[in-house]
Length: 401
Image 1 (cartoon, helix red, strand yellow):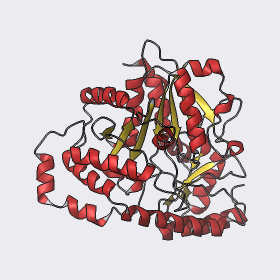
Image 2: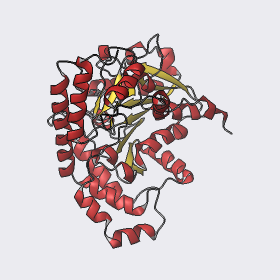
Image 3: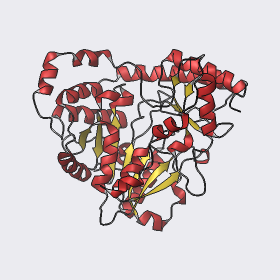
Image 4: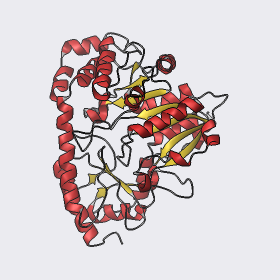
């Protein structure tokens, strides 16, 4: 067996299940899970209808899918990236469909990191645990870059030394951030791009929350957008990842893209051809239709905004918290240890959240997840309002003690 598997940390939800084992949930309330970031809005009707078409299914079942992707899917992705991020890309050489961002974010480390010179891989702290696992399995050393309130919850790269940059092979960024909802600005991304020029590392940008944001007039920028504004049409050292899971409420479709530097895409395609990760043809056709449509995405954003408005209004006087610029997460501080807080929530009001330290690591003498929890507003409007009302009483009565 690969001995590096023994170095992997337990997944956050495995730890959460262990924490809650034996905790008796409140018998007076049905469970409202705010723990898992799984979109629960309905899939768009036009895609559901499309999926029912016999000719689509027959075409999908009757052929091996191309790993490179159907031309209509690559064209749809390229059109989306150009429309959304003002970053023109070549669908032939700079676009690659993937089975959701999770597997692709893991796989890119295996393709990019040289086993003879694995160096280090930088990632935000807190983070999506796939970055860490991918780094460890690739033989690289994880370096955790703190994301705290002092830096608006964006990675504080200012503390990285030249020697540390020289050992870096890959940098994961996540904007909008999970679990903070923080958005990196174009100047911050461009500083990172100049560092990549100097030190030769690859930037993998996880942008799967890019289409859920608070201000309709200020969509979060992307890495390719930042590069193009510097005059870089080749997107050197850049690869951006996005998904239909959050954008279109299609987590079960397992559909996303990798897009950017043609030389990286070429090698990533080679890796994926051997890895056997081609998306089924009928999923590719559905995905092309989803990337081509913006109406359902605008409506989806409005539903999240309404939930944030309702929840924040109920909690603002008893549990003040930062409203993120994007994503569907809240990342509030807790008045007691977050694990105890999580257990007490189940006992008192049957609401499930994730302790912040399950999404972060001790580094630089601190842990950015300490005394925080992550809450995902993915349930229905009614459930989110009900959860906020329970939380309000929970905080008022100090039932976390």
